[in-house]
Length: 141
Image (cartoon, rainbow, N blue to C red; front, top):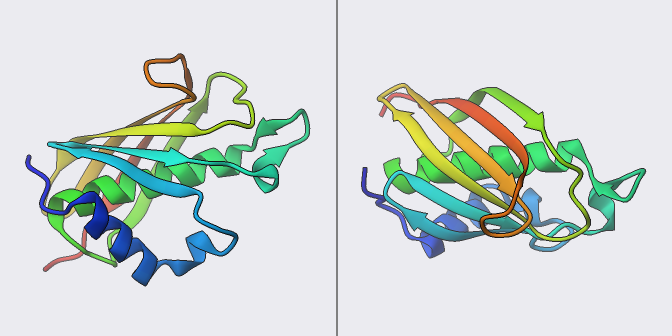
């Protein structure tokens, strides 16, 4: 599976179709696109914290969901109406207020469904702070 969109094209599409994700400044950025894979960086701020000075669960879900969507876009092109049908996340370690990285891998990319595996870490090759799987429905062309 070779990507058909570049990092810059994915950013332009997300900026155009989903400007609300950058309301308080850009916190999400695609850092790499590879065959069947995509990496995204999340730069959290104080608004992404929960009591205990850790990044909130909803913020980690957002990262996994947007990164999963982006890996699909990278491989099928700009399809605004691909939607999440399922997302399961396991929180493994307490992340500090520092960048989070999400590495996504397409497990299946069919005509109607895509299944994605997402691993969230705070440093390259570091221990995972969360693991998610997502399923997306892809609209007919």
